[in-house]
Amino acid sequence: MSQVNRNTGIARLLVAPSVLLLLVWMAVPLGMTLYFSTINFNLMVPGMKAFVGLENYYYFFTDPSFIDGLTNTLVLVGMVLIITVGLGTLIAILVDHPFPGQGIVRVLLISPFFIMPTVNALVWKNLLMNPVSGLFAFIANTFGLQPIDWFTDIPMTSIIIIVSWQWLPFAILILMTALQSMDQEQLEAAKMDGAGPLAVFRHITLPHLARPLTVVIMIETIFLLSIFAEIFTTTSGGPGTQTTNLAYLIYSQALLQFDVGMASAGGVIAVLLANIVAFFLIRAVGKSLAEQ
Image (tube, rainbow, N blue to C red; front, side, top):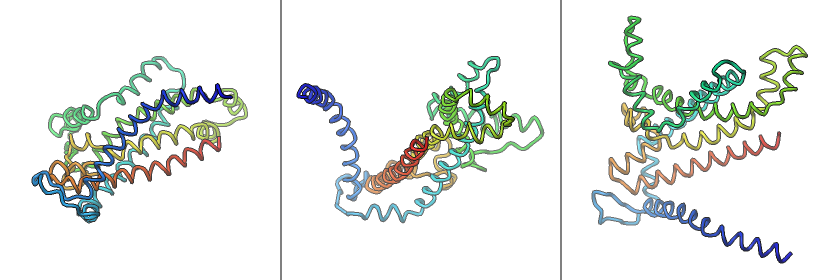
């Protein structure tokens, strides 16, 4: 028994530096953000750092752009989740069946996920959605149609398309991997009993994908709450505040209006929002695992 305790103590001692470094890595930025959120700190007046308590939070909540930023954040997250989960499930099921070139198609399907967000946004902005020289404009002109000025006429839809294209491969990869572990004997038995494709999907495939779907939704939601590069590269939050989410609003407060105090308050609010969402998603994952 003493040998077990000794080994446990040695293991904890070996792990302690990594845990301590991780805590410092997380605690210092969070502590500095909390500190700056309680002072009046503007980069244009660096010597003024008066303590103002919760005043920065009040001004952030009452900022005319806050409601738009929160709404745009929720719309962006919700629509991207619907597209990636829906299309991801459909595509994963389609490519799960053997066909010539299956391996190449699978590699091509997941490759967009490894493209940096900024590069992804630039490709869509300059090569595809450009109203003059983009591919979509060329197709519209070919059929005698008026090209769409994507980032002026439908800016939020454009951002949703760009972000969905980036995250769709992630959903496909997770769901495609999950389908590999399906009970093939159960599928064969269902088909022998006369079950059609829809019945198989509803009663066998979908329950089997419940756990990976929950994981996909949880991970994507946490990352989608902080989408920034795509908005910064394409629309800069505009026109007006039509594509301004919380992440871009915080950037605007800090580096465009130089108000570090209010931006830090926004950062704390964003962290709280992400943790609230993560809490409910983790509970959903736990419930899904318990039902398996």
